[in-house]
Image 1 (cartoon, rainbow, N blue to C red):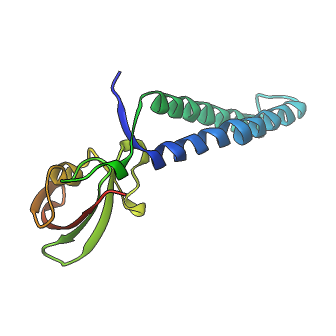
Image 2 (cartoon, rainbow, N blue to C red):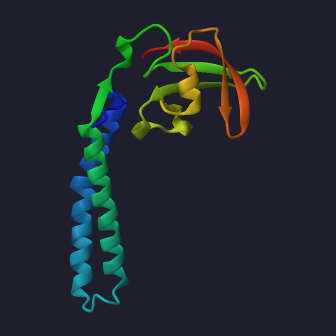
Length: 156
C-alpha cells in the first residue's frame, strides 16, 4: 500500500471533516430517511431518493478519508530545511509577467491552488523539488512552457 504524504495541517483538516461527517451529516441523513419513509410510497418519494443519494455520497467520502488517513505519512515541514522538498513554502516569480506567487507543496488530498496549496505531483511542484533560492525552473504544461525564478524557501 502506497504511503500518502500529508502535512500536519492536512491531517487535521481531514480529521475534522471525518468527525463532522460521522457526528453531524450521518445522523441528519438517517433522520431525513426516516421522515421520508413516513410519507408512504417510496417509489415516487423524491425526498427519500435525495436522502439516499446523499447518504451514499457521505458514506463514500467517509471511506475515502479513512483510507487516506490510514495510508498517511505525516511530515512536519518545520523540522525540514535546505532545498525545496515536500512541505516547503516557496515564493516564485513568473519571469515573463513578474507575477509573484507563494505555494506550499502538500499532499494530493490537501491540495487547493486557491489557498496556495500545491499538489506535490503537479508539474510545477515536480520542477521545484530539489531546487534552491535564486534557481530558475521551466515548467511545461498544457498552456505552454513557463519560466519561474525561486525567490524564497521557507519551512513552517
